[in-house]
Amino acid sequence: MHNFEHTEPILRWAGGKRWLLPTIRKILNDTAVNNYHEPFLGGAAIFLGTPHLGRTFLADANSDLIEVYKCIRDDYEAVSKTLANHVNTAEHYYEVRGNVPESTRERAARFIFLNHTSYNGIYRVNLAGKYNVPYGRRKHLRIPTLETLKTLSCRLQDVSLKAEDFELCLDNIGPGDLVFLDPPYTVAHNSNGFVRYNQKLFSWEDQRRLSNLVDKIKKADSYYILSNAAHDSIAELFDKGDRLIVTKRKNAVGGLSSERGYASEFLFTNVGAV
Image (cartoon, rainbow, N blue to C red):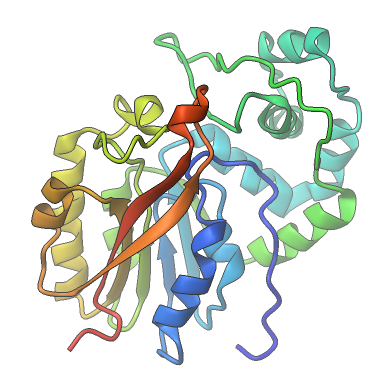
């Protein structure tokens, strides 16, 4: 744990939790945990920003996203070489967006390129399953370098990566493990700009399933940290007698300036609970 080095995420991710890292580290403090589980991986900021002693199990329902991480883990040099072929113009963006390559390394490079050049780092598909986020017109990009991809590849070695529903994380959870849960927020609250992009991805029924999952995690004598919308309905659904922490984040998603600012979020956890 003392040799841990913080690794930066390589993707822009709407609702990403990089800003939450200081709070997560404070919550964990010196808590000894075994294996680490994150079934809503997204931009992977929490995984990459916290140390873990045991095995790591990462998952997400987004199979394209998981494919990217697998490709970087297994052949980051090929991904980097392919990524270098892309240029930041609207014409190239829409050409790349409209064509899905056959090879995994080309698809991974495509995903990273679109992510960094799209509007607000949003991942959104239409009813036909096609990525449809518009060009972001960003002049200053932070496309991951070969060295950055190599560092991430090293972090992902011996890590389990699966594209699956969040409930399946229970298959590997044991006593003393830590589960970090960061579902897409679906409750309209505090002018939360990215709710609109997630309401079809994660329904209220999914929130209920997640609440049941937390119960099962606790029965397994495991730790959990859950980030969720700051809304009365969420506070009631996830009231397990554990700690509730109110946090504030900068709201970076939303086309109108009136939708930006700061929004509250809830953290539920049994780490350090009396």
